[in-house]
Amino acid sequence: MKKLIVANFKMNQQPSDVKNYFIKFVSLFTGVRADVVICPAYLDIPLAKFLTNQSPVKIGAQNVSDEEEGAFTGEVSAKMLKAQGVEYVLIGHSDRRIKFKESDKLINKKIKTALKNGLKCIVCVGETLADRNTERTYEVIRKQLDEDLRGLYENELESVIIAYEPIWAIGTGNNASVKDVENAAKVIRRAINENFSEKASRDIQVLYGGSLNEKNYAPLLSCTGIDGGLFGGLSLNVNALLNIANSIK
Image (cartoon, rainbow, N blue to C red; front, side, top):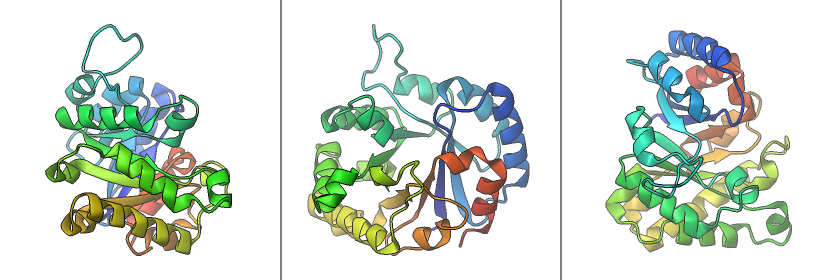
């Protein structure tokens, strides 16, 4: 299985930036060593999809509504994303959990709605610095997984990817150690094993995200139990993301 690289632009890039970015990325991405999913802002999805047509690059969304449709001002539904050619969606990113106070109950509903509409879910879990300092890391991850995946059928996990992103490492320049990441991956797979099956725990893809850069990505993405990475700030640099996607082992 190839490594999976997910790029999250967050609230960055103007349409002209997106155009230049994707023209360069698509022309130089080999697709040999990694699968790539890029998540631009909602407004840039149609352009990104057009520029990646017939290329190996997949387009994802950064968020999705938990509702199917209706009077929900400012929301974007899974059905709308699917109609634009989106294949993946980030759910439960720390930005959403912290700033927008999204609960595990809401995240669970978002996952079910996205799966129902044929989207693949990249579900983010991770602990705060306070959790880490009080040695609650694995308790927090387990609780999030139990609640986020509650009520799912095992076959639905084929469209679920888990991204471990310790909140204290995001945008801080402080990344987790290899030992931290491998232990988190074990906790994630153990939870999947106990809630679903051993086969599901082996098959599910697990990513690491949190201050990944060109200097530290190789050992972190080579950790036992890790199948790729979720890149934030670095992904805005097209040359950096290209270098990683084309050279990853």
